[in-house]
Image (cartoon, rainbow over all chains, first blue to last red; front, side, top):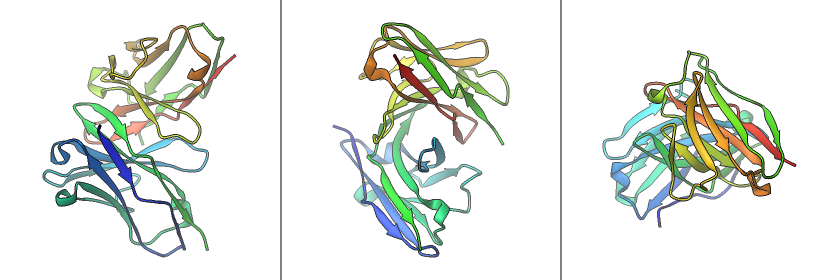
Length: 117
Length: 109
């Protein structure tokens, strides 16, 4: 069964850095895109960006370009989303999702990030 | 800034039919936008329903269907069930980046 398993919830302070992960299993990790989606409390879904682990081709939404970094490690079938300087406004649930051929099919369970002083 | 617009909320009676739409600020939505539709219930991750306008995933109930109509992407729910009460999101492709609609809260009476 295809699975995307995300790392656990985090509580951080403003200004701190963070890297969350998304591990894929039961599919060829290098031949699918992995996307990241933000959902702020009580709000809708926002597409952040996407990476093709096979060659590290990465695309970002203009809204998130320069704010986060998406990467992947094909040796452990894991994609990452990282921040160098967190803000309170980064508080949200972050989902990873598999993408191929115009479809986003399998989703991770979500990672809750809380940024508070 | 590209905006994808959905109805904020819709109400339907159990057993009825409802249509949700997805419009783009750039003009008519065509197959080249690869419309995707997702269902999200409170506290859960989104679930994929429809991709590339009309295609269903293996787990998508038959009562859900997707189409393009009047320059918009459309999600139609027939014989609506109480468990269909949820938030529904569309997602459109804009040449390298994707944009979600604001979501439609579907209320089932």
